[in-house]
Image 1: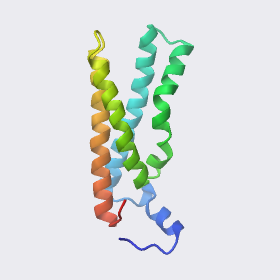
Image 2 (image 1 turned 45 degrees about the vertical axis):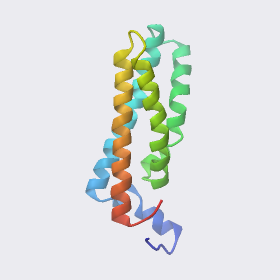
Image 3 (image 1 turned 135 degrees about the vertical axis):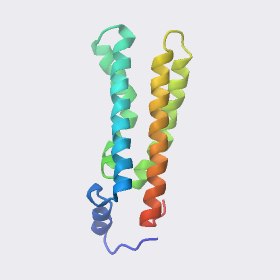
Length: 138
């Protein structure tokens, strides 16, 4: 396990500017998929009513709030945040599978389940490579 003399040293080490190229690529790919999922929820909320209404905005905010809680930690490459998001993203996968089995919404559910799967795999790969490189525990 790595030994850090101060919290600032640990925070500076884990900032995205000091990540190795392979881990940084995973982080950027993960963030791209994360924002794609947020955009997907905006589109799907608008499709509920056939057009964008204030109620669509409320639905969108309810859907993305659990993901937004972790946004800061994802940007700062906080390892514990990545672990927690891996648990939460499984709920979105289940939701996508349920939506896929509703008549007429197969493609919406498939997109949500696919994005959730991509995010989950990228999270696991990031966590594994981060732990191996920095030799830290969770």
